[in-house]
Image (cartoon, rainbow, N blue to C red; front, top):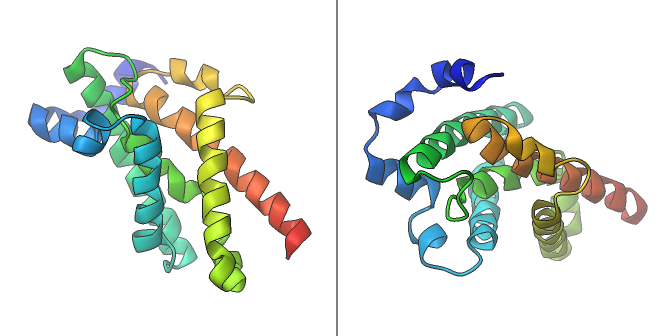
Length: 174
């Protein structure tokens, strides 16, 4: 998909003020004032998962995930333009929306683990950060996609890798 074709889907972002775009993309001070902003974006993503996704129905989960991803691609792409930077480190909305993808299909396991569920959440967080930082399995190449797609898709790929590892790991434990 070319950058021009992508722009058609996200014209609405041009109507937003620069402070709104940048503050949303950076999750306010999390991306701009704290060290290791991607890690803080991931922590916020764990909270986002817990509040919005954990108790969602499968259809609700997928709908909210798709809507979040669409929103993040638009906002992150617009933030790139307004900040005059390619995939700026302070833009952490991509980590935030990718974290729930790490736990797709794992709500039952989280409930089954009971008081040990925090270990699964911690493992998901740690694996996601590892895959997001190292970008193995061709994930690094995804960053070359145009605009917000390149900002967000590499994080989604890291989340899919995390999800696969968590599912395989749980198959041996549960």
